[in-house]
Length: 479
Image (cartoon, rainbow, N blue to C red):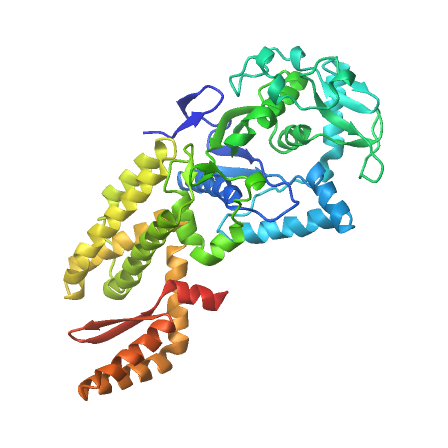
């Protein structure tokens, strides 16, 4: 089976066929850098990070572009409130964004274009539209003639005569048509501006991505991604601007992720139910948080609830526990081909419109099969040890390299910390064993409680106690 993706433009699943065999060009709308990222931003970035990772896993060379909007009304307003430059605000929150994405395990974009670095490309695109009478200038502001692009509304599936509610509102009396939207905004006192043939000013929001995607990926690039809230007007306008100017396809496939819901409500700044992404990462850890993001299909809404977050944390702990034990039990065993059926099932799930929930279910089945083999492997069964090694290796490849679940890293961090604190822990365990021998169970329990507070889990086994560092404790220590 080949990869099939749901395309918002055609409203159907279709086989993925890149513009150039073996290569994928991909553009994802990035942040407007005027505040910290919230968990909604995290979902979109994880969805497209996983798509990118999976394409690489399937053998494609991926060119991934994710922009930064560093000039915008919100940035200007924050700069004015803080009495600093828009450049300072944009630089500060671009760094915050990149640091937060790194903490979430998002692979860095191959190209991270900034709007202010592509003013000339935007002006060239605007001039092309003016030359074709598809745009016009009024008092230094340039508007796009929506009705000059007959296919306007094709992405959002809206009728052009029913779009007034969603139209960008810039004093309609200065526009030829209320639907027309701004490509270039005339300069205002105290705001950043750039010289242009039609007057000093700054770009509108929509023109940025049309110009930057065209500059770095060219016509007919393979995938354009973003949140469902961007379909209209942002992505609709991106298409109109580019295709009206060039008479060529802008993007071949459009993929959109669903929104985060807080209980029964959509997450919204207006009602104050925003959760900072950095806080969620600190509280849950990047792997469990990504597992939560992947618990619903990327096109569906995802509900932020404590119970679902706890389920993700428990599931992630199941993965780390298996990997840690499998490494200890399998040792240097040569992996068998036991993981093959699980790998095939994982690929089949991901090939079906990136069905991550089903792919994660496959990982649970893989871990279940591995857990069933552990006792035999621990008892010296070489074939079982080879199967365990195979399943553990597949968990790392599929769970970490493709889904970015951070399982191996969590185990590695915990093992490194265990090596550092081993003398302390071993001494406490000896004290505990002595207390138990003396039937001083209160003291033995107190020592175990102290170990638990340190993030040390103790397993009492027939052959003696076995201990390990909880991944969450290792993560806190590393942070």
